[in-house]
Image 1: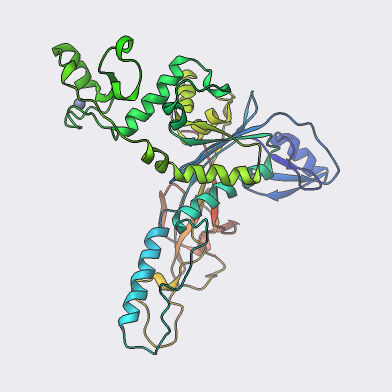
Image 2: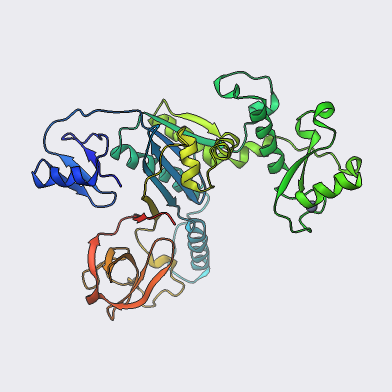
Length: 411
Ligand SMILES: [Zn+2]
C-alpha cells in the first residue's frame, strides 16, 4: 500500500509508505488531499527524488486497465468500468422526441436535419469512452511522476502483416513474435471460431493450423486457419489436411475494429507527445513469457514494460456513472403541463446518489434512495450489500462523483 505525495506546488513526487505519511501528517509537514487513493500534500518545498515510472494503458470499450510501475514495483494499478448506457439513453430520448412530434402540441419549428456535425465528430458513446481514457490517465499523472506512457492500439499490427520485412526497434524481437502477430490476425479474421466444426465441438481452446507445413507454406495468413484443438487433432490423425479450405479477408475492417483505441492513442499523443504504442500480440507474448494470469491490470502492467514489477497489495476499481438521472429518460413522465422533477431531490436525509458510506464496517455506495429513508447499498462490481437500510445506520465517507472509486484486495 502506498500513500501518494504531491509537493507544495501540486506536482507529484514518488509515493511513500503509510508510516512515513503518518509521521509527516502528525508533525504537520503535510496535509490530506484526498481519501481514495490516499494522497497527501507537503507543506514544505521538495523537488523530490524521481525514478522512471512508466504507465501502461490497456484501452477498451468496457474496461480500461492502467498500471504505473518502476522496474521493481507496481505503484498504482486500477481497473475502470466504463459507461455502457449512453447509446440506450440516446435511443430513448430520440423515441420520446419522435412521439412528441406526432402529438397535438403547440407549433415548434422543425429541428431535424438542420445541424452540421463537427469535423472530428464521434458518436457520443465513443466520445465518452475516449474522454474517459484521457481523464483516467490525467488522474494517474496527478498522483505519480509519470515519465513514459504506452498504449495498446490494436490486437495486431496491420503494417507488419502487409510488409513482414519492416524494420524498427519493436520489430526486432525475434521471428516467433512475428508469428504471434499473424496468429492474432488469423484468429480475428476467423471470428475466433473453429473453421472446421464452427464451434459444434464445444472445445474452447483454439489453435492456428498450418495448411501446408511451416517449412513449405510459411507463416503467411492464407496458409493459416483457426481450428479448435479437438478438430486440429482429428485432422492430423485422419490425414484430412488437404480438405481445410484457404481463407482470405481484407485488412480494411481490421483497422476499423480498433478505431476506439486509435482515437485514444491520438488523444493521448496530443497531450503527452512522447506516448508510445504497442500491440496486443506483444502484450500477450510478454504476459505468457512472464507467467502471469490475464486481467486488465496485468495486461496494463505488461504494456507498461515492467511485467515483473512486484504487484501492489491493493488495486483500485473505478466505476464511471451518470451525474444526473434525467426525467426525460423516465418511462412515465408525470402529467400536468409544467415539467415536474419526477425524481428524488439532490439530497435526501443529507445523502446524494452514489455517496460513499460506511455500513457495518464496510465501505459501499448508495445506489438507490427512497423518500422513506431506506437506501440501497452496493459495491462497485454490482454486488448488493443491502436492498433496504435506514439512512440512520450509515456514515458518510466521500461525496459522490462521476468516477466512483474503491480499494480492491486481490482475490
Ligand atoms: Zn472444431
